[in-house]
Amino acid sequence: MTDYFLDQEYQNQTYSREEMNFKEFENCKFIGCDFSLCNFIDVTFIECSFVECNFSGAKINHVALRTVIFSKCQIKDVNFAMCDKLIFEIAFYDCVLDFSKFYTLKIKGTPFLNCSLIAVDFMSTDLTEVVFDRCDLYRAEFAKASAHKTNFKTSSNLTIDPEKTKLKKAVFSPENVKGLLYKHDLQIT
Image (cartoon, rainbow, N blue to C red; front, side, top):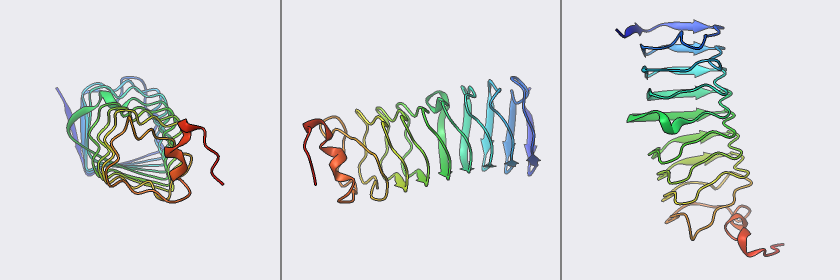
């Protein structure tokens, strides 16, 4: 049986491995909470927000994220690819998502604002119209991704192989366009 929670606010909670399982949260706010020990099973978040929370290393298999906002969160080494893909809608503001995985997800239009995305796996991901605003994309992997109309203009440290990534109408700045030529070992000054 799934427990249902509506319009709740949770502050400074540390959740155990199974404490969040089989629950549905709608229009809830989590502030300063630690989910790093969680192994989520059958959990749904609808129109929820997470502020200054820690998800680093959490297992979020079978989690539904439907219109969820993460702000100033630590989300290192989290595999979003195992989330429920139905109405998967997320936004990230001032978050650290290093080593996380979005493999094969459709995250069209997702905003990543001022985020660290070091070595994040975007392979085979639909990044259409995604905005990477002031993000560090060092060693992020984009092979076989579809990045049509994706905005990379203000981001840094990106390396993308245009032969392996669909980039039609993607936006780049003159400073970061050299990341498209990295494999040719050119010196651009």
